[in-house]
Image (cartoon, rainbow, N blue to C red; front, side):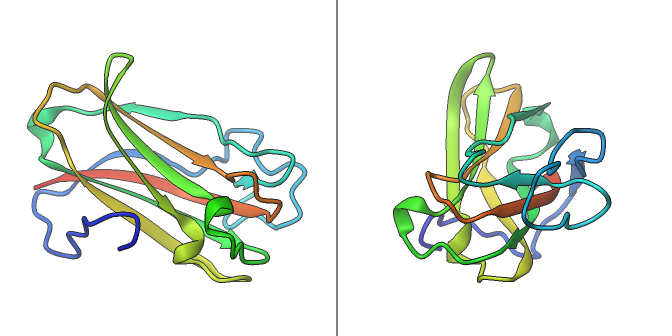
Length: 156
């Protein structure tokens, strides 16, 4: 809870899957020191590749007041420097304008050699919005990190 004050736990109603990506159709993790989490490909962040691509998807206010975005992460060595901890970033937008943005530092919840699902919950803004974006940033760390099974769910 150091990066966010939202966690709706299991008390969710009318959960609706609005986006899912297992990265099997991309070119992710072709030259990665860590194996994929599932299947043949995962996103791999490293000293050489600091940012993932941006994963955008439509989102409608009438489909729920809250958003949960989750992914599965695998670490090699743990990044201990808080300022270099990889970030899991979610943006809610109206056109090109960012209306709301949240991020969590992945290594606050992930130890070295561990594979774990991590999620963040957001209360959607009252202002008009029509899309969400997710990206991952290695924050200038040289510690490799693998990401897979990105999911977004809207709920009440």
